[in-house]
Image (tube, rainbow, N blue to C red; front, top):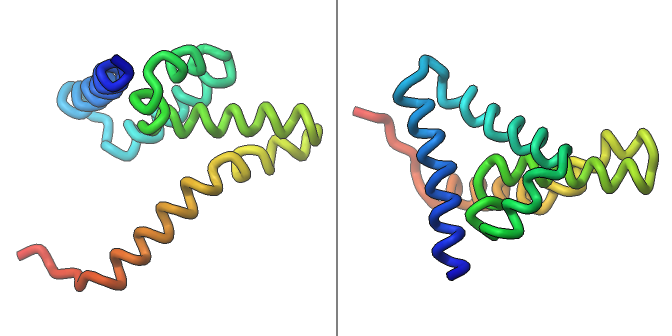
Length: 118
């Protein structure tokens, strides 16, 4: 049942993104940034965590989940370090995911030879 919940919630987030691509003049980059900002706002208000608890990876893997992770890291760091935590919290919380993305991007770039689109 957990897989089904994750699939449905993650799928709905993707459907929202696809509708925004198809029906608005927003660029994909702005839509992606919008998803992160919505995740930050909902995470800061405490509304995203219940969704993440319900849907698991269906809510934590998309970009809105990354925004929630940044908000959560900021809140925890501010509670423990004060105002300085507002600067260090999001970086600390997202460090593992960002590092993995950079590492695997570099690995793929070293293994494969890029080609021009022709």
